[in-house]
Length: 166
Image (tube, rainbow, N blue to C red):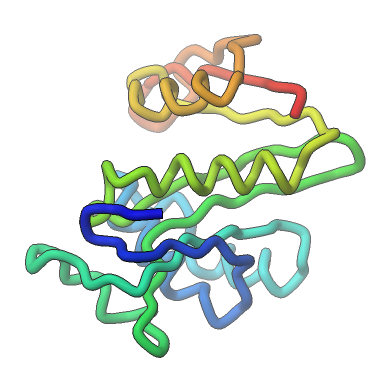
């Protein structure tokens, strides 16, 4: 798979040593610290939450300063997706891509891996109503709205709840 800055992209499952890079991406991608490092550490250590990582061997453009951390043998983590599976259901918690690598199809590749790993399950997620690009991505993967939670987020934004049988 070819991207503008990514010569190769690999999706892998995170280990505890990846928690700092996951946290850095979350801080850069979200408007606030929605995924505290302590939580990531606890989730990875307990094994109750799976983090899928998008890893590339490419270098970021000069504007990116976050990518110094998380680089291993010429590769770097540029995005993640986290989920929790229980029996025949799975809850997608977070999907984030380093801003320096957004718009390159990385979120789509993470979603594809998520769907493949969880086929035969019913998937749920929530997304802010104003996050149009994320909503479009989820709709492209067949997720449908089943409910709304008005004023759910810290900024008063409405949460859109979506589901799909994988």
